[in-house]
Image 1 (tube, rainbow, N blue to C red):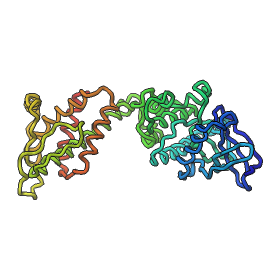
Image 2: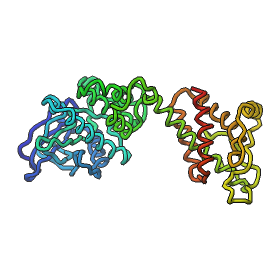
Image 3: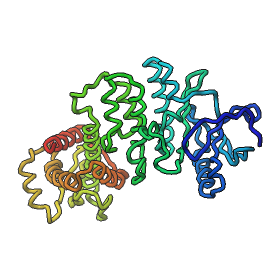
Image 4: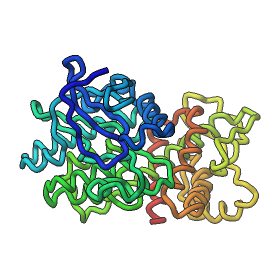
Length: 386
């Protein structure tokens, strides 16, 4: 196949980027540089990239069209193209804050789409984020460029890559792209009011970053309503709030499971990381119109003393809330064990997630008063541990 009007986009990677016209249509061609064209492993990698991304269709991603053999280039990934400049070139043009924010929103939209389809970009670089000349629409190159070695990647690109993406020691998640997006915001010089957003995106430890692009955009769009002095808005404390909420949901599920199914003989365990609340040994009350949850929590033998100590410090509940008299002491023990199991918030989140997935299918219902009382008991204890 012959492509006309070809122009190369310079890159230090082993791939070669070339714009041109295929039958009158503007296209971007991704091929291998000559030194790598004869090496099967790189040919396979190129084909794998195409197969991985060919079905993605989003207005702010360059769409993959086909794999073609092009005269002078060899095997290529052919993508859509429109006359554009790189984001770095765009920023040199001196655009307004609103225009820059619009670009961030469009990049975020593309990343959310990728994450929603189970993919992390992992190598977001403003050199290969393009902005069309006609309408200033963002077009992200959804392709992880490869380099001959770690020294070949330009420092100008390397600074936008998350630390974990550089060393390749862990599986990447959305927080790698959050890091890159935060670094792009930093490069835009939008002003000190965005410092907190940058801090929450670009921490070395990914557990301290915003967990998702959605969280990033919420902070980015409402930055003026938060201050650095407000500790509850920092990424670490947002993590803790999320953790508290997640564990609260899980224990509520456990309450429903244990107290509403006392007549069943089969024990159910969500996972090895589940807390040690035992099955209800008493039958449900026959008066279903009372909306009360009856029964008791039987602590495991090795935690009986601890449960008794916790019970002595627990306020006594009555009426529909009587179930908390047995639940809260054991809940304290279980929360202590979750916190004691690791100092890494990521590890704690993983254990909570495993537990949640195992119990969510058994979710029943408590009334509003029961939920409110439980949430207060839970949050009060979490606060006491901070």
